[in-house]
Image (tube, rainbow, N blue to C red; front, side, top):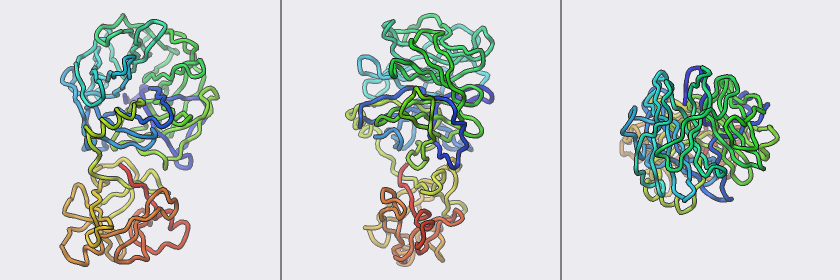
Length: 457
């Protein structure tokens, strides 16, 4: 949930060199995602872009094999959209239930009118995250307040699921509330789950990590952690100071991959993350931004481990993107785009976001190569002209085909990344210089870094 002054939830990783971090304190990402080694993951989110061109208040899904690099499904369009309440959702959360099926919860809000006070949340059931059934609105309380950023967990001591969410209680500030349920159709009366005496929002849990439960939340524009040996309402105590990049952050998520815990958060649609090998230490290190890529236009996400069969079924059902984005190696906050028909790298996010989407077509001059076809100007391709990359209309000439064809090679700065050699000038590679894309001979370490890119989504 994103509000002007209040805390909110969910997050991604940041590069220490470019993101000033308050590194004191333990933060563990909300929606705790723990899985066996090699298990894939699903991310649920909604979308917003700078000028609203990519905004959609429906349920979006992405998948990952490492919980770091994400592939949007259904061409980054929603797989289902609410028909009740405010007609849109924010802050979706997926819970795998005790019977192996899933339930989807989300805030009932379309847009950013924080004065709306919905007492309900959206709910769907799903057997396999390919179909979403039994849509309903679940009423949580009768109070004159909102029901933001719902999450749920299984409380074995009660034999019930707990639904936690943000609301204003009689205290007059935002707290984390809880209701209990067995079926996500009826709930018990609300109780205060966590109230440190000041505004908190976007509560997320990491449960039974070395016998301790960790609750992470947004407070004072940073992510703060509390912990408890039980899951009882009122039992959590704060044990960290805030963690945030400049400008504040919200929406914590905790995901464990190959023994490492990652804490994700959302700073105005830019996901950052930190990592630790031990949640109990309270020591977090900023994760290199090179190693993760958030789904395009994603906001306030939730992460859940899934089986390989569910992953395969989702990809078969919803399809891989028909486009790619390319990220800079030495400026990993920047992506390829065209602007005024010139190629360049700019910081994500931006609008029109479609300027950064490319269809990798077989090379116009050599099918073993690649040509970069614009998604939003499909008659135009990137080609070099006087060594600068331009987005020009394909005129059908041999010269154009040669200038618009490139050959993929192992990354010049990192062989796990990608570089692109010019077809017509094979001694030159695509690189950025003063953020403009061009082709140059590469002879230095800086040049090799400038000419190395990640091909993803």
